[in-house]
Length: 432
Ligand SMILES: Cc1ncc(COP(=O)(O)O)c(C=O)c1O
Image (cartoon, rainbow, N blue to C red; front, side, top):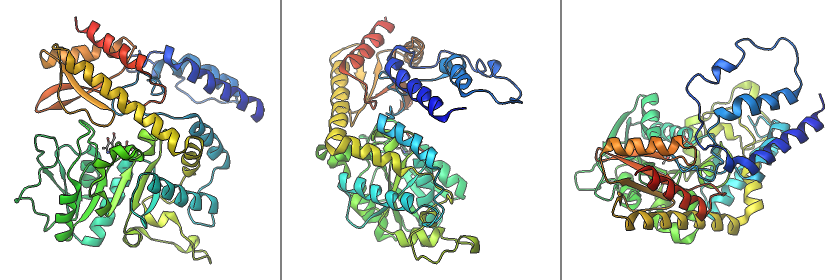
């Protein structure tokens, strides 16, 4: 086996994939079990060449891939693994740093702190916040809830009815009581006189909810929460990257009051899955909650071990891909791409709004459009299945006040105006 030759072949495979991904169906055109029936049931006895792995990648796996790198992937929150991030992943695996302590990987530890601080500056977040990387927003939120419970000694989590299910999951895993606050007509957490946080450990406002990209009023929530001794964890997993553009910072109002904040570079900052940034203004409290250093990990250096600030001991060199992306795009490059996504979402929203057969069901925010075709829920659900089955595009759905509605999220760096136009044409043709 030649690492160099196989490596060239793998990079060629990756480059060819990215060149042709727009010709592939967006949603995998397979049935459950199709791939399983083609995979050997028993493991290989003897060594096979890497080229056979690449061959089977093409023949077996490719048809069963939903192509998240496709420019007409508009479902959930569309994402981009950019080329610098992809290459940095290769190198991170090559180096295989396991950053359990500073000594185990000074580079990984110190680069992670530095790039977290770079992103803090790019997004206009307060000086003095300390950030590190977790795998996903689900883990970041879990960690924040653990810290909040530890320091408050309370057991209640509060979020809006539109908060992401990761808050429910974290509360359930921790055995914490979850209270959901109803939303107002703008789909924001309703803050009225009855809303009290006296026995609450942590309040989780969302900036950019998953269903509608609505923005909870973080400032009044944080002021009340702090007055009652509760922790404030802001979930800006999707919308946070938009703060790199000054015109989106209206949605940051009050975030500077947060005790912790999660933003996902793997959602809308061109970093390949997985990379979730968790900042806190209270790093000592995180350390209190998490630090547990057994004898076999004690070192003479009095240096930062990121494993003392979150649930994971072994940590991947995730900062490398974030570093590569930040350097190869710069603030300007990232702003250009995010602004284009917002522009395309606005454009799509104007087409929907102008067509009497269609309805915008929530204000268009960031790069998300929530809409529906006139007609029943069943008709809209069938429409979604039809357009997705076409392979031309992939959208997802949610419900608003019980009604089935469609979501089109723009987040892939390859998406052009032609792609968005095509999506609109496919939707209209499929609804006839
Ligand atoms: C607002 C929000 N928070 C949290 C998450 C969970 O993200 P992750 O998949 O990184 O756990 C999502 C996922 O879409 C989200 O939209």
